[in-house]
Image (cartoon, rainbow, N blue to C red; front, side, top):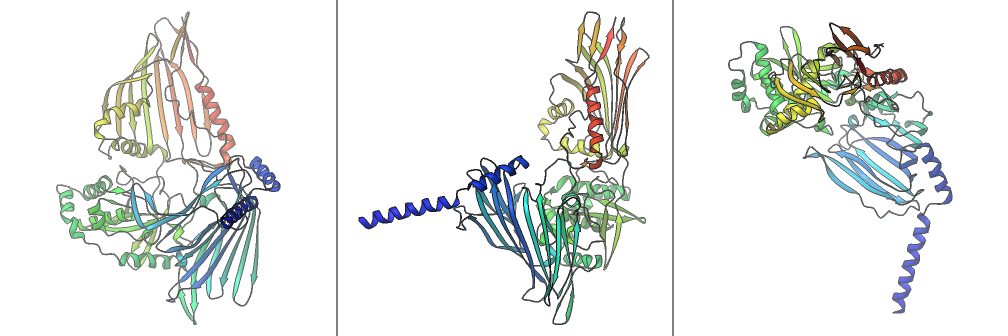
Length: 635
């Protein structure tokens, strides 16, 4: 009994000793408070981070493996914090060590979870995520995080970013490049950061050390540029390696990149017989080549569910077309391949295309897998190339989504390749035209509205409308028109064919607008604007450029018939704004016993640049002020 009591006392003492050695010190609490003042929206800070990169030739001597490690000191700067620390891996990589320790170097009583990566309720056996759910109980609490990861093929190891979702106080990246490996390191977005670089050489290798201090957390902003445009990072291009005087080419230039892509295509096993009957059914009765292409292209858009998947070998190798056809779902590569194979069955010269969307800053001058994040199809007809993206639902043939316009595209061409650029469209190709004439009925504005959608505004409308269950479409159409506002009563809706993506969408309806008119004595106060476009466009804390979904062009005309016996006492001042990237005009005019209110918002480049944000903030403040003004009629 005595022995048991002594053991119990010993265990309690050990536990108290352990707790004492992991509780935050006065210095750690002080540091946490100081960092919280500086980074008031962050829960933790990475006090110190060390990343190392080493290379070795694989056992089969066919490629180069990468050993990548990360060690971090995590400090809670908030009162308490709950975060996830995670790492993705796939069939081309493995996690060797994934540990979390207390600051006394004892294993933390938090166990990692390891799951398949899940998207849209579909699982993939090629992508997994390993993570800790970490609880920081008090301010100043510290954990030590360590990761060791092996990448089986150097071509998949493309970049390292200096920033993190949390502030990084001090980071060091050590890259050891052996003499037998030719590897280029490209540096991006270093300006404005405290980054130092040293290079040391010995007989065996060249060692690069990058040090950076006080990196703010990456800020998640809507409509922001991709991270490759804004955050400091290193891009790795492994060009070749030598083994026993034998040189092995990796990605020395774009031709090598294409050669690898083609090897994946050549390894596929397409069986077009599976969908031959469907192709014949689709093009039966089509009188022109364009009609045949549309029938196939639109069928893929409408019948193949898009899923996103980019990791590992499956991130670059398309699924066999018959698999996508039978399953009725696929990623961009699978959808592009099915489109290609169906067009080939129909007799067309269709090809696969690799492309990096506007989310990526790089071009094909860089032979790296990081250049691409998307695959589409093209058809070459009468000497012209037309691009088809099955993931863009309700995109019309010969129209291209903003996210790929102007971007380089790599087109398969046998053992060779072709590089072209996707055509671009002007903003007025995406016009949204709105006209209404109001009459006053007591304190209600009543009128007839006509709307017309072009280009990407049309495809966006059709996608949102057709994604709604059939039994709720009429209700959804009303909600789309009035955004659920009970003051905007809609009736007698007439539409064009909302399944036809080759025609502009047209809507007409009757409207009764409440609570926009007030009468006092002999005066009527009228707020004529219901939509108030961009009234909630908040740029007050914006840090990065605004990248719109597409170049938009809103053309709005609102006419108010002046009731008998009344004249115009006051109308708001006109507003005209013209910059490199957008033009906005808001005009009021008294004409033929009516007030004509005309607005044009022309975002001609689909962007508001970071350097122009201060000007844009003032411009949109002026618009908000104008929206707050009213028309005054008097007897």
